[in-house]
Every structure is written in structure tokens, then in C-alpha cells.
Amino acid sequence: MLRQTVLALALAVLGSAGVAAAGPSGTPAEAKAMLEKVVVALKADKARALVMFTKGEGGFMDRDLYPYCGGPDGYFTAHPTLLGTNLKELKDKAGKPLGADLYAVAEEGTISEVVYMWPRPGQTDPVVKVAYVTRIGDQVCAVGYYK
Image (cartoon, rainbow, N blue to C red; front, side):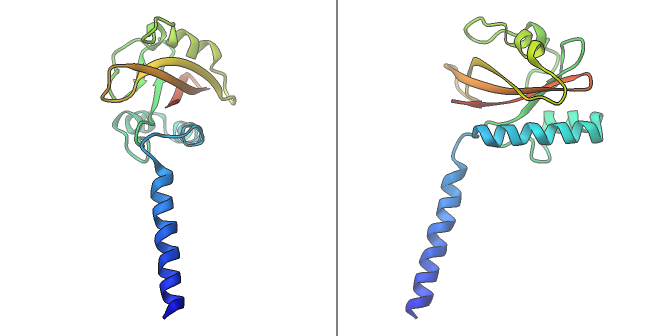
């Protein structure tokens, strides 16, 4: 009886720790892992992957983590709300040329970082956000997390 109670308590503690670990915001490791998943999906089926990224399907929307991509002309090819916007011309909320910075550092096979100011989803005040960015063929893709 005591052994069952201890086991039940241990499982309850471990279960709640797993829930707490998820937290309200994505972590740097989760953002990087999502970007690595983006690379695999784009290489497998670019057209399908870009639709999935935009819709947040297949695990491509996790709390405040989501991928976004721009094509060679600079326009978003995947984003939950900014399709039709030119990523290359996008500036952060402090006026920093965010899109130009993303394109400047994006290299095939390398994950780089760009720091910028952006509001959390559903908010208006900008906070520090870090984007992991890479190039996959003609696509520049990123996943950002909030600090």
C-alpha cells in the first residue's frame, strides 16, 4: 500500500514537472529544433511544407513558436499573418532592418541568429526576440523565440 502511494505520488510529481517544463513560451532549444524540422520538410516537399508552416500544421505552431520563410523576391512564402508582405523590407518595431538582416546571414547548412524587437502574439509592446535563420534552396526561413 505504501509502495503504491509513493509510486502514485512520484508519477504525479513527474507528470506535473513535464507540464510545467512546456511553459507559456518556446525555448531556444525548441526554436532551433523546429527550424531543423523546417529544413527536412522543405527538402521533402517544398510546396506542401510552406502551406503547413503558414497553417501551423504538423507541429509547426507551438505556443509562440512558428516558422516563417521568404522567397528569392523577398516576399513571405510562409507566415501565419504576413503573406503578401515583403520580408526583405520588413523592419522591427525599433526600426531595425529585420528582413535585410535575415537575408544577409542566411546560409545553406548553417543556423545563424538575428536579434530584433517584436511584440508577443496578442500584445503590442515589443520585446527582444531571437530568430534562428537558415537558407534552404531559394528559401530563407527562421523560427524565433522571445527572451
